[in-house]
Image (cartoon, rainbow, N blue to C red; front, side, top):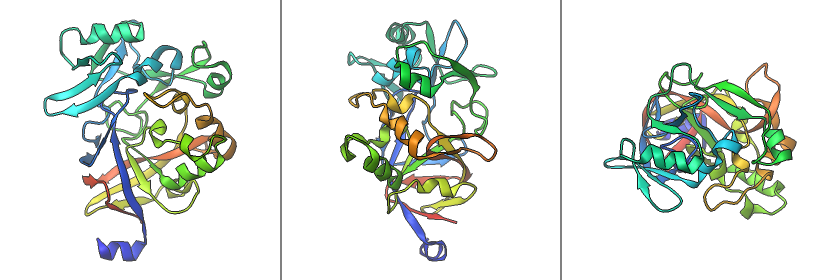
Amino acid sequence: MADRAARHGMTGRVGALWRHPVKSMLGERIDAAELTGRGLAGDRRYALVDRETGKVASAKQPRLWRALLTCRAAVTATGVRITTPDGRIWSPGDAGTDEALSALVGRPVTLTDAPPPEASLDRAVPEDVLEAGPDAEVPYIDVRFGSGAPPGTFFDFAPVHLITTATLRRLAALHPAGAGAVDGRRYRPNLVVDTPGEDFVEHTWRDRELHIGDRLVLRVVASTPRCAVPTLAHGDLPRDPDALRLPAAHHRVPALPGRAPEPCVGVYAQVVRGGLVREGDAVTVA
């Protein structure tokens, strides 16, 4: 590992690892996990499916699904555990789980680990959510998700999402409320990479490989276009429209070549070679 770092120049270290066992629910910070082509172990393992529309529930449509961000999901020795705002604990397959979650979101839903055929979700136009607020009925697009991930997964695009502390510092420097108003949890990454400086540095990693720890290799495939989700309340984090306004004003770039510029924060990656990832692992850009 030392030879590789010397050859490529160490970029930083894994500062934090996050997984979100249920799509659009709050996640958990972990010390280490296996990372394979199907993502971080336990990440986006489950999602809610609307029984009336057949679509996957996502807070990208805040009017319908932002209540999911009041729930916390974690992986335990016996499976996934969901804690709802009233403090009650539910697990997939338990009697009453679907009914409790349906009552929470106000729509009939089923918690599942199997995406429906040709699964899709609704993505509200982010700028319209900013203007009208999360309660408003605004235009949305139907999105087939997971085009950069293996079949049978609930990832929006690719199986790994990462962000750097350089990007978070840049957003903090721009934020009218100061550094304390910026929290990386809003952007729902798997990996937070500690890097020097104050810039949207990970955008420059597209089409390059990241070597992490002793074995793991990722390929960065796209910048991450931001939706309305970072602006919403996340547990104890209050609503913050600037979480989208700032990248819209200062980092509007094509997520992929040929696409129109969009507000982007963080990048998506695919797994070239899987392995264990741990907080503190060295990260180098090849």
